[in-house]
Image 1 (tube, protein in one colour):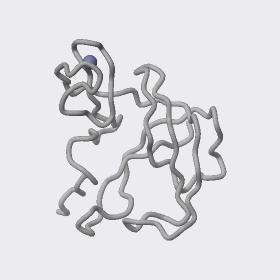
Image 2 (cartoon, protein in one colour):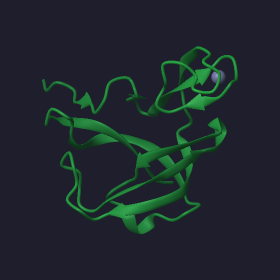
Image 3 (tube, rainbow, N blue to C red):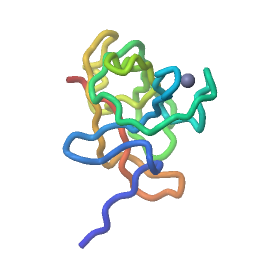
Image 4 (cartoon, helix red, strand yellow):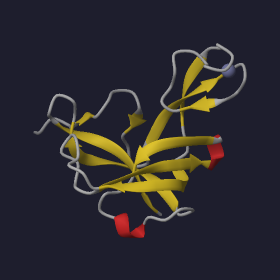
Length: 132
Ligand SMILES: [Zn+2]
């Protein structure tokens, strides 16, 4: 039996039928973050791990056409996605197979799938947002 693919970076997402990014939540000022910081950068309060919304809206994006790192497809899109339920804007990879469907204001949802390689050059699971 094949070993499951490693995550591109440990602890930043859950891989399941309904994958979730793991962010941080400040128990003092109630702000959320992604990725999770060690302490809250606003109030220095403790930050606990929390799953974030799977649904987002594209705030802005760009299609990168230079040679990609980590064996990503060429071209590959990156963008800012608003996780409206969490009050959070994150920078993220977008679906490289659906660049023609990307648009500002488009609804997207989180995917976790084999894509590219990790820092050690091994195939890995990566998260990205895809048009809903
Ligand atoms: Zn705080």
